[in-house]
Amino acid sequence: MTVSGQESRSPSVAELQKFIREKVKLEFLLSNGDKFVGTLRWFDDSCFSLVQEYEGPITLVRTSVLGYRVIK
Image (cartoon, rainbow, N blue to C red; front, side):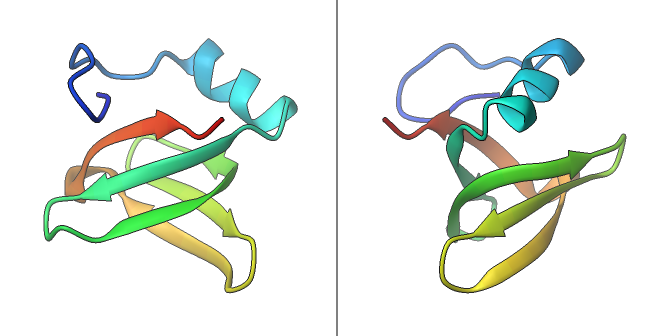
């Protein structure tokens, strides 16, 4: 699953682990139109935990996530 015209696919476990290790900044787009930016703390089969720069951690339910993109 990705955002902004890129191919739609689910991220692999290895890709998500790399995002955590390298503290990659991501933007998640939710089905209600909300966007959240931060670094991935952890993930499981049902959730993503994201650390936002100024607002602290948040947990996103996977079924509400339409996609993500790497922020450069």
